Image 1 (cartoon, rainbow, N blue to C red):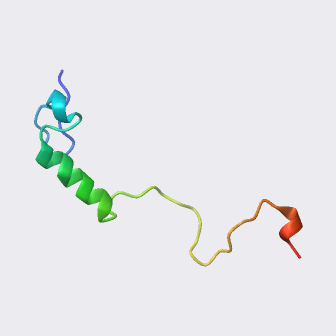
Image 2 (image 1 turned 45 degrees about the vertical axis):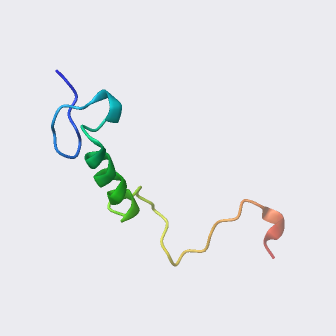
Amino acid sequence: MSATCPICHRPTEAAFRPFCSRHCADVDLGRWFNGNYRVPSFRQDNEEELDDNPESKG
């Protein structure tokens, strides 16, 4: 079983792995830049950042 491109599902090319072409690699990069791929976070935007330094708390 050969690997397939995650964008178009064609067989991958060694020069562009895991993609089949420069085009599909650029499509994937564009998706990252546009924010289509995200790492989930449990932090809410309105939560204060936690500080590990107990001396900074007043």
